[in-house]
Image (tube, rainbow, N blue to C red; front, side, top):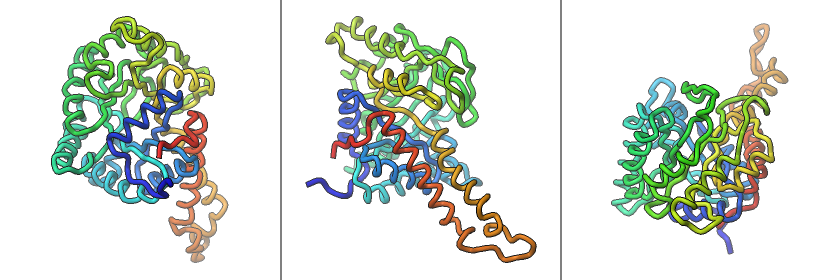
Length: 348
């Protein structure tokens, strides 16, 4: 009988989750969080969906978790992972922890120190702190991107961590990093082959690849940028042909970044071509904040001491609007699981 509680996924369980998703043509929402409240909301959402999932922190989220005046990405990440490991035990689904986009200038202050911590933990027979880390080399030449990725992959394997890389550029803005919307948003078959030559196609260690197909971070309406999921299909086929792999196989475990405003058919196509992880941030931020705004507008004379009155403690208690915020975000996580066909999918 399945346990009602589960710890954070082991490295083996995480790989099993991703393999099951690729084989079953579904994907896991990777929910960005920046506080204990948004973490709890994500956990609640995955539990309500009956879905395994991924919870992640960006560089900015990690800084914020350390304290707005401290701004230490490693401190925030370690605190987040420790808290998540404890509270996740109470939910009946598998959860993996991930660090999101890390550009070159932040590797030494974010991913590399965290890898060192996990390597020491693994040497002691403990689990790594995180289950996966992302190296975002989209801003450097491909050769340099893959050279750094090779080093990081070796270190990740030693620490029992899965590496995620990005080949191509995601447009829009995230955590102060802004990229133009142009032809660079589309990875090429040559990019895919170069990646497989440098890192293998699963034969030299497990990694995930964010190939870009018109993705844009942040808020945009459908039609503002053209997603071309067939780019992913062409990339998989190019690697299969280049290395003589089994026809129809999907060597890459792909990641979908910048999905806000994507059409259901675009998401479904991307997943069918090997996407196993889709980052979700903008939509869940709004889903968290919208109920807070409603609470403040509805109870303005309770949350404010209007005309010298005392207000209503039950209404300005952070737990009052916090619960509404968490419920709103949890519902959006459930929706993400449904959109990616991972609802009801847990490997136990």
